Image (cartoon, rainbow, N blue to C red; front, side, top):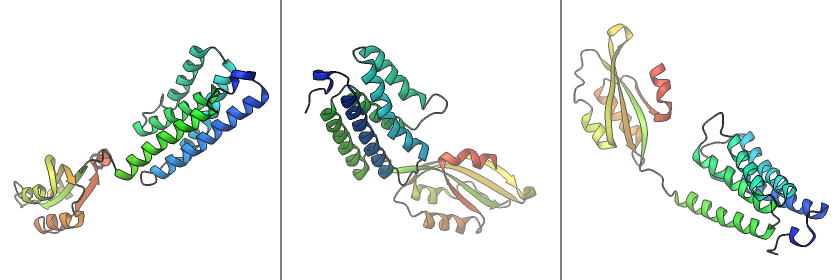
Length: 227
């Protein structure tokens, strides 16, 4: 079960089909794991298809090249990097690419039993990390935008509220809006994930005269400044 299927008869049509079919199965299972663990963040169909197709592609290359391990590993490494040449990838997406590539490598070498053991082991690790939310930060980087009347002294006005709901904050910009009738304050904040965002915004509104208050995730910060 744990010997290479190519060790006895070499590369035949039967062993080739077993290797490719096994790699397709591993790719499909990895894609299901990815879908489950990325439901909240979202995902693209093309990336899911990539995870499914990558193991059989790698397995075919490894199986047909055969004994030239150096060349096969070089080609497999190139496959893992193609997805990220033109655009930066999320580290977790890169990890899934290497996960799929590794299973394809093992299947391509004919070690089907080891491929599924490796598949199950990494799946258990991913599941534990996902269920326990291991490494999740206690705060979220956000941008707070507050509008205030031009005659309101904003220095120290929101300090107590910000200290209550955030671990740290910085006033990044002050500018006038509405032809000088309003000031706009833009803060970078680290908000506690357990904080009640509605209560936070309500307390800010009691201090700014019930004018606009905007709270945005930090990754959309560029859109705020472009507005």
